[in-house]
Image 1 (spheres, rainbow, N blue to C red):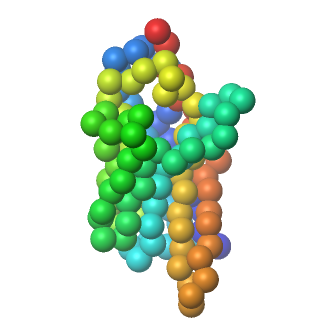
Image 2: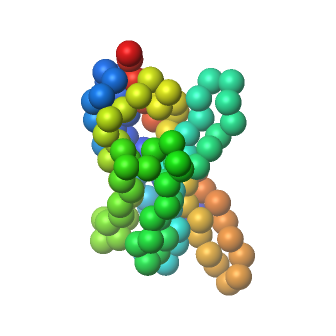
Image 3: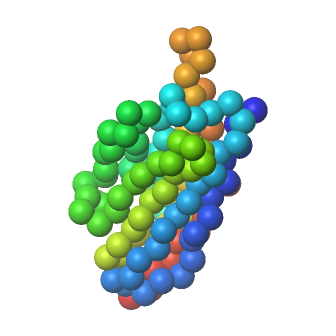
Length: 119
């Protein structure tokens, strides 16, 4: 069983920074891809940033240059450093893991952490 627990969300003023953390447990981690998604009220969940097992990172256009995803395989953690935050970044942020087992991909989600950016 894989579990993901996010932390680090909160209320911040526009222009501020936050660092989200995701701690994984179970049969995960170094060979699996990780990511951060977000969902704002009334909107669909969207990919914010992803990082492969090899450390290659990709970002949504809306966060490029402002957000940085990283991972610490020894600690089974993934991070999202968010800077220059905007009110439109307000959402629940979810940690995601894609776990590959014998040719099958399994998707796991954390419970989410709220990020609110005030103007």
